[in-house]
Image (tube, rainbow, N blue to C red; front, side):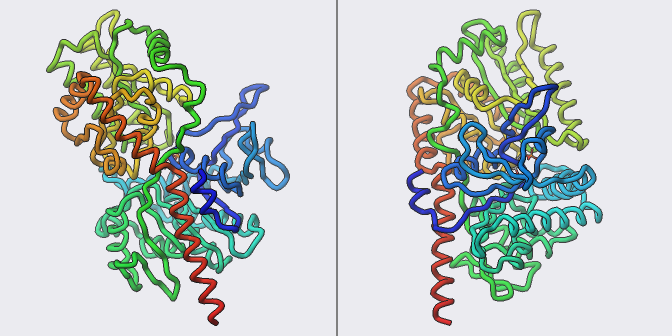
Length: 491
Ligand code: F6P
């Protein structure tokens, strides 16, 4: 946090994202506040809490409107306000085209190697443009100076950097793309590829999780846009404006707030076992994420099935708990995944279970951070089997939750996190036997080895935490602002 504070420039900070950090929902007479299941939110919230500013996001909760002031603003976090949340309203029709359509049926499958065909519709594109413009306008309304630092988040806002640049030419725009960037050939599927790239190149700094994604981006620019690419200095110059393209691997806060007040690991274990009705010596493997087809949820359930088939001595002794928060359920690719997962869990439970043994527990609901951390602490192993993922913060949160230095992480090689967390058991989620074997290895791993591996992962995350992620971008932004000032002074 100190590093972040030290690197903070004097400028004001604005964040632009689709997902809001706090959602207010009404249930009868009561209004409850929810923190959404979002890697983006868990990474950025501690950063803006530390540096203050304004977060501009889509107001999506049923009670969101009744909690804002007349400028659509509310101070958050609700218990100890540290920054301002400006909510933007999006109609159902706009949401269909902008969020479900262009962002999640177009760009999401386009950027992930998940074998779901991207769908691009003219009307979705029109609404995507309109909503990007609405957020860019909100930045101008909220900015108190002509040169703020604007943090634009994710694939929902590829066009916003250029729109903001046109309105606030002196702004420092840091855009972070939270999902992978595909190769040039794949990206060319998008009918509006030039506009998307041009929009992103309105940024001062453009960040991806890995160098691999930066390289894919350079190749895409090279193929489709007339510009000057300087690989050595990692820049693209378009129409006289330079964008720095760099890898900034995202991370989590350290120490994690969700760890505060957690009982010792043995207590968590006892509580979780009691809540699930498990015998005291049952081994627990967990998977926790949004119900998304990129996460490999079916694949890891099949791996558990394979393990119980090939090593029947695990029957009755191992339970796999899958927490899956419903997400984007209006889209058939998501609702059918949910149906398939329920059917597969039933099938596996029928094959290996008995009256008093249910090997797969599928918990389909949103779990708060404290609940998630308790489950992490109770688990012998955590499985992150994403088929493709920009970073994957669940992997980092699992290690952060284990201050007892025990527990094993089974981690897909197709996550950005696998580049940093080499002490995990790295697997190919498409290889069923390999995943089942890794699960078996994890569950039999001697204490000493668990400790060595967990210690290495925790050290990496502690050192490369989310404050450093933000600080590195802000330091690069400060250098760019300094260069610009000198350039302006030199006339
Ligand atoms: O990090 C990828 C991401 O799509 C974020 O942009 C988003 O907040 C999160 O996953 C959850 O998705 P959604 O906001 O669509 O529920």
